Length: 50
Length: 482
Image (cartoon, rainbow over the protein chains, first blue to last red):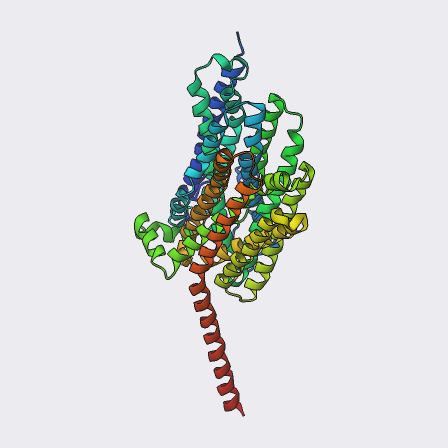
């Protein structure tokens, strides 16, 4: 394994870092979508702001 | 200059791997504490099952006044995902990752789905039941969001269980596998029993706020337990990542599936699993009302009945673990399990025909024992049959068959009972519809035994062959020595 593409400071190489990052991105998207949906449903049953 | 950089690097390097979500090296021998931790994912699976089949079933009908047919339809939705377990297992087997991971990403995705489903479920149910302003909202919002919530939880459960079992199988040597299977089953049972008690106590005084707290609390507990379970379990490996990268494109799913099914007796084993699980599963929901209606048990008594069934099942897991780890054949054990179930159900039927409650209690205990033996043995058999690189697929096939059969069994048991109940005139006894179902179960178990019999015989003959050759080699060896 060549050392050039290691990413500071984790010691992961570029591909590995990108994979870890993809999990973060996916997780954020899913959590965001869930939160949005949950808020919509709450607003339907007990509307706030008017 | 830049001293901080060096400092930070050294600190990071000195951090032990216990702070990382993946193990650094795959150790030869996995300690029991690590396996116990891994088995926590089964607790979340049990929790979700109890919430769906038991708690929400009652809450939706009694407290939320949702029509029973709609509730049944919603709760059947997760079943639709069961066949996809094979696909998930296959995807995990052939997963390509720069970190060399195969199982953890899927357990994480499954956990996310479980969490997401639980997070929106209480609001979806409240909208579905027309709570607050939701009365004026269009109906489709409630239907579709509740359906989505149940689908998400179901998909998450199937994913977590399939891949979690595959990871556990990856981690241990073949002779240890029966113990791990036993551990997984025990944790599932423990999760179901404990969460049933907890949900029952928490939802005693029902309010919409309490429903939201309980279900969303389950979501948080699910994520916490699953994270704790998968932490540090799968080794990160650059070598495996490199292998994954250069590996030829895997066999397409249909071909991988047909090679798995082409293995000797695989199809027969799956059929046995379906028949036996169906046979044992039909009783689960009927034992309590049967005790109440046919034998006059009180509500508290029928709860103890469930405990008795669980105790029998637990004993079955223990016996199967011990005997299979000592080298017994899983096919034989599956046959014994199904064979024990038949007198169990016979005793349950006889109890309402004059045998009385002792007969019923013995029958319940024996049935639990049989179900424990059968479940453990068939899962062990599936794992043993799986080629090393197809463990996910094999466990997916087991899970798909098992979950579908159990789900259909539970649903059909209720339907058959209600159908007979509605055609029955007032004069006939209370126990008649139940006894019809129990008789059907005996028939299915007999079919399962009929199918597994040749496999058990073959396994026994193979074992005898092994012993004979071993004996002769020892004899010739000692003859040479002397």
